[in-house]
Structures are given as C-alpha cells and as structure tokens.
Amino acid sequence: MCIDYGNNTTDQFTTLWIISPSFWPGEYFPLRIKRAVQNALESGFKVKFAKYAMNSDDYISDTPENRAKDLMEMFQDSEVDIVMSMIGGNHSNQILKYIDWEVIKRNPKPFVGFSDISVLHFALYTQTKNPIYYGPAFITQFWEYPEPLKYTIDSFKSVILNKEWEIHISPSSEWMEEFLDWWNESNILRPKKLIKNLGWKWLKKGRTEGKILWWCVPSINHCIGTKYWPDVSEKVFFIDIPEWHGEFVWLSIEDLDSYLADIDNIGVFASIKGLIIWRPYAYSTEDKKKLEELILYYTRSQDYPILLDFDIGHTDPIATIKLWSTCILDSTKDFVTLINT
Image: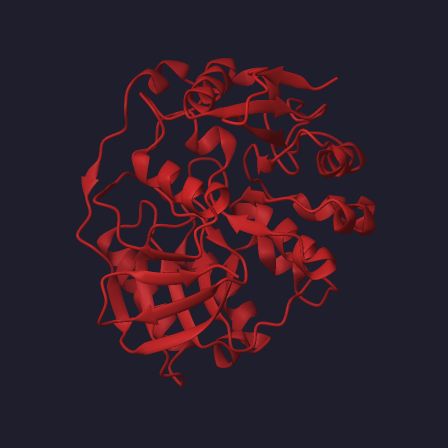
C-alpha cells in the first residue's frame, strides 16, 4: 500500500508521487518527512509515497527490483501527476535493467529530481523521451523551515505546472550553504542562514543557443559507454557536483578533476556549444579558484560561453530545468533564457 497525504480530489491539488530509487535512510528522519509533507500540502500538492520509498537497506533504500517496481507503478497510476525523487544517492544505475521502458512510453509524465537521479534522467530520456526535469527533491527542498524557498517553488511551478513556454532565469537574490546535521532533528526547526547573492560569473563571455543537457558527477559517469548515453553534440551543458563525497566531506578538487577527465576523454567539452557550472557548495576561495582553473583547462581549445554560480542542483535555492529545452546563453544579459519545447 502507498502512504497517502491530502486526499482532496479538487483540481487545485497536483499529486506528487515520491520514490527512493537510490538512497534513503528510512525511518531515521520522521520530523523531516513530516515537515516536507506539510510544506507540500500548503503549497497545493497532494503527496503519495511509493510502497518501498520509506525503506532503508544500509546505503540504498531497498533492493534494485523493489525500487524499479516503485518506478514502474508510478507511471501506471492515473492519480499521479508528477514523479519526484525523495533524495539522490549513488545507486540509481542498479535499477535500470529492471525497468520496462515500454510501460513508460505508454504512460509518460513529468519526472523530477537531481544528483544521482540524473542517471535515471538519461535512461528515461534515451529509452522513452519521457519529460524530464532537473529540479528539487522532496526531502531536500520541501522540508525547509519555515517553508520552501520561494525561488525554488516558483521555478518548479512555472516550468512543470504552468508549462511556461519561455522562461528567463535570473540569479536568486539570496542563497544558502549552511549544513545542518540531519541526525540532530532539532536543526530543522530553524531557518538556514541566507547569503546575499552577488550574481553569476562569466568565465568566458559570448552568446550561444542549443538544447540543454546536464551532468551530475560522479553519478552520470556510470552511463558512459552504455545505451543510456545521449547525443551531447551541439548541446548547452551544465555540470552539477554533490555536496559531499563520503560523510561530511566536500567533494575534493582532486576527485572532481578525475571526473572531468572522464567527460573530456569521451569528447564532451569539444562537442558542446556552451557550459553552465553550478554554485560550488562549501568551497573555499582557494577551492573555487582551482575549480575555475580546471574548467578553463578542459575548455582551453573552445570559445563558447561559460557561466559559473548558477542556481541549480546541489545548492539552494534551485531552478527547475526541462531536459532538451532550448537554452540561450548570452553574457550581455543578466538572465538565461529557456524555451520549453
């Protein structure tokens, strides 16, 4: 049985179906779950948890077979409007061989998440052309105290619910990177500290236009050489990098360098038309300088525009972006244009 919240059947409610296709520590964070559900309901959503979504099996939520069953059921449930991931992880790749892609082709619906969920994004798109969105996860964005960040919710609704055809994404006015220990649930009863946003940074200026595609390292590296790898040529590419690699350890420049080398070795940097980099999470000034040096090194032979400090992925607030929408990057503008096709 699924866990159901908000049994209002009026049109004003959009049903979010929550799955855990990679990681979830199950029952350890009941207050966080409670707050996420409450915030979702107050934002006008009905919430359903898939059968195995609340389970926990060490570093994964459940067996690959059960996680795939949840994914399949969500596409066949007529009550589900939007499928949302509970959180990321590093093991979405385990469930790919258990998915019946024909079922999804017959029952397409928006699928949203970020981080390791980008593996499923690539697979769902290449196998089914199902509508895919890089955007909030349920337990990471909807739990915020006293409410989810307005920038995040407004972007989510405008792109997925309102299906706006042309969207101009501007920098958020404020952002946050304070880490509140999940194991101390009293932390979620206070807001995180907000930092004034000084805007984006252009590492290379110019203008370009192309379909948008994303990459979260190291998760999406799992798809290299498989049938789930999409055509990256002539795309505007954005790179998202997780908060930590291991418990409370921020992804090091050394590890990042090796993942970027994977991208370079298969010719991505030479094939794309533009590059967007997420806002580095908890990087020191020195780390950020090294990040910029890495990006400029790997794109040294390219002259396309490169944008840094974008509100996407592992930062807050975050924008929601539809895969394969047309992206216009123009360094003379203070916004990024997305045309949703």
